Image (tube, rainbow, N blue to C red; front, side, top):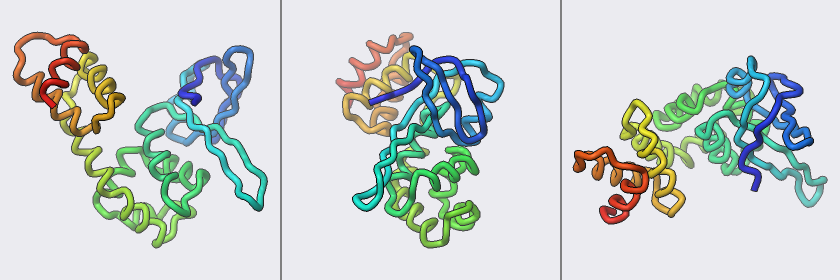
Length: 199
């Protein structure tokens, strides 16, 4: 799977960007949020999502989407998994609202805010909330446990634990417990080892 593309920006617009990398020019569809992050850059790294569209009755289409932040890519894939919500509609949602605003709208049952986005009717807004409320609630709880200030060892340990199959919330709670109990400045490796014993 194509995880990200890094290179020089050869074309930039609010809806798409072309990044040259390894002699190839990649056309990526982007949201307004991502555009605002890269509009003054000449090179960048965008996380990617390869979307296959079409059906048995129509030709298959292949589109590449780019995201400046992982939170936006995660929201994109979460929304895309909902029946009846297509990639174009999802891009409108993530262009109109930040990942945090989308999470808050879903967790607080804010149908009106979601319905205010073009292409989202009341039924679709309610379906989004119904299908994602629990997941978004868990994600917001996990984020609230994160220590501010950007602890690199903690983030590395969390990423490794999630890749090992633990939920983000479970990993956050266990790592926090290990860090609270230790007086030492633990490395990522130490954190992972001690957390695996604590889980």
